[in-house]
Length: 445
Ligand code: PMP
Image 1 (cartoon, rainbow, N blue to C red):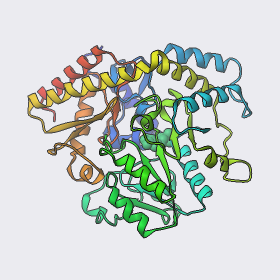
Image 2: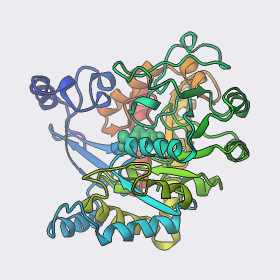
Image 3: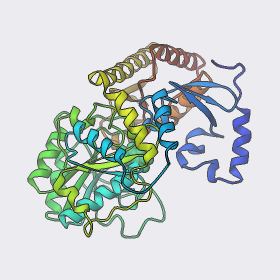
Image 4: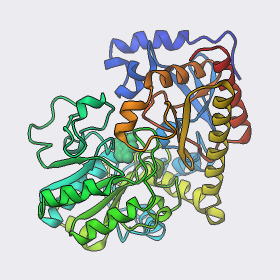
């Protein structure tokens, strides 16, 4: 329901209050003015596919906590699971059965997960995976691709945001652009940055740094620069070249996990990484992440080897939620995944049709439930450099902010994608397309 006239005055005044105590009024730059303009909408509650703000406006939510909610908001089975966990103790920081149980499920459904270690966030899991790769191989360097994001740890916080094309240097020798001040001065010395979707770039780097590369870390589907699929055969070639050169392949499935297929994009693309990381959808709204992989490598975490600690690791509440969420996602032979793909595809087809009707130069790139609208004159965007050069990010932001007024909440960032979930219904698609039609009719973009 949209309350007319649309007002977000309570959000505005909350933001003013927030500014007196929180930097940019919140706890992450992605929730502040960089994405939301004057002030963000303060969310009060959520149910199924909708969120409700503090002013009483409702929105069909396609952002879904940046993909952390595969079942949507306040799913009854998650509520039950969490109640059960909380009422018998929140945290023991000691061995628990739920940890074994969820690890067993993951071992069963994720092709490369011979062993599992729980952490809290995608960032932590990727940090640990890199340390593990270095510790296991005894080699210092790793390859990280332009435009990929693995969290905010120093060693891989480089070329993860869009920049003007001329600042990136030649693609054979990309300039490393740190995404933050304050990094350890040497943090990026062993990080090799090269373009993605280009196997020759990997060959070149291996040749240049022969014997020094512990791992290649990659997103399976690029999800932090819009949505960019791997070229046909690219991930397979990456697997082959790393194997032949004794380099570990780390697949970051923080976004693709429990979204593309039960076993993530490693199942979908049929590649077996040495290590992989998961987060977001695993905890269905709770901070649960994990890294997993070949037993021989994971064994290096054993006491005296590669250290990974954490009081909150294997959050009991989070794992109760994870078990409940996985049960929903895996029932009926994984029908849930077909459903999310169908919803994603239908929405994207509808948006494309609408853009054609209004003569808008924009494309929708998607892989199943993951999608992103890109305002561009190009027929498709294949890598970070094309994204930086050819996508009108300001226009996307205007579009997504204008949609708020019509009750639709998409990711407000041109580089961060949106998702279809189990909670979305056909009428959410119709509602969203109608909202977009109104924005286009208003001539707001
Ligand atoms: N890896 C990928 C591919 C991600 O998209 C993200 C988050 N957007 C992360 C890692 C970091 O996860 P978290 O925010 O849970 O630390």
